[in-house]
Length: 250
Image (tube, rainbow, N blue to C red; front, side, top):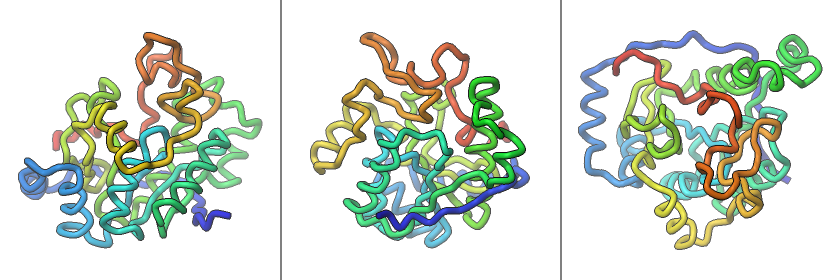
């Protein structure tokens, strides 16, 4: 049985779209030339020790980032969005990675019962308005959970979506610094790292799901399709909203 901490969230905090451009530039300079481990060291030990949380979906590629984090500090807070619409395989994979990597502080985030009854009483909002569903099940709970932290770490990569193509290893978003240690990694590097460290793989990957989100909004990918083609198929949507850039220019 997992000892995942469950956090209930009712509202999204007010986004902060301005930060200290001088400090951001300094952090970007310090990150220049570092590998993924070095960028994590910058966040977890040098600049924001005990002030940083990792955002993880425990999806197809999550084991790589979580292994790197665990090697530095296995008690780093890991924020996991349990939307209530996930595959059962994802929940079991979360528990397996927590045990395998010795993660000591996995926090499961979810909308409150009150919010669910108000926004999605019959559980079918995803079929009518995917953006609204993502907002109340993901963006709002994550925003509230991140309030105490000065920095966050993501597993985003440039190759994944058009919105991520220009990302930097260090950014400023929604009131805190955001570190993207895997920003330049590709699928081959991720696969090689997984093999080298004998990391468990998400069970749905072999079943045709190379990118895994909520069950109603994720389908198998066909031969020749982009690896994220199964996410929100048929919609002009690549992001759920938790990792967008804020347009603040820094």
